Image (cartoon, rainbow, N blue to C red; front, side, top):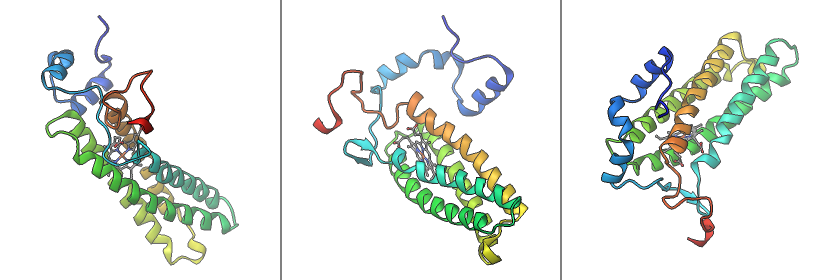
Length: 198
Ligand code: HEM
């Protein structure tokens, strides 16, 4: 029988942190699922044309934050203030996208049953993304009044930290969808009818 989790110390530590259940109860997942009446997935609350809106919106903060940080890195080595300006406005747009994404994520999270692993992972995911947003806001406010919105090394370091954190938060998001079935239709299967036909 394949192991439920890899046994390396790092994984064991992470597992302990992310999953308070015992190995035995993890193995009996299938039984739990059947006895508690869980379906294979759980439809998102906020949808457009039958698909969850949250994953449609997250591309904006993720893409814009990374792009802004890359432009700020270039700006650190360049005399051309245009790079600072591009970085600054990318981050501004990213923050707007993050707020919109957070609203839909929060609405989806409220529909997850209490006491489940998905509820805990969702909370961790949302809170980490909240910290990411605050870090970008701080680094953005610090340079707001600078000539050409110049990003100093301090702002850049905060941005890099925030991007790294958002990678961790995205992993929690993937866990919610791919492992815990949040945002996946209850009747999903390889030959299911179109979402528009439901
Ligand atoms: C603004 C920053 C946010 C970003 C960048 C973000 C990113 C992500 C990512 C990458 C996924 C996985 C999508 C997939 O694999 O298809 C996800 C799913 C999810 N996130 Fe977020 N998230 C954000 C905010 C939030 C907040 C504040 C909550 C509330 C607790 C939340 C709740 C969820 C839920 C419930 C899912 C499961 C899928 C669904 O709802 O459709 N997210 N998120």
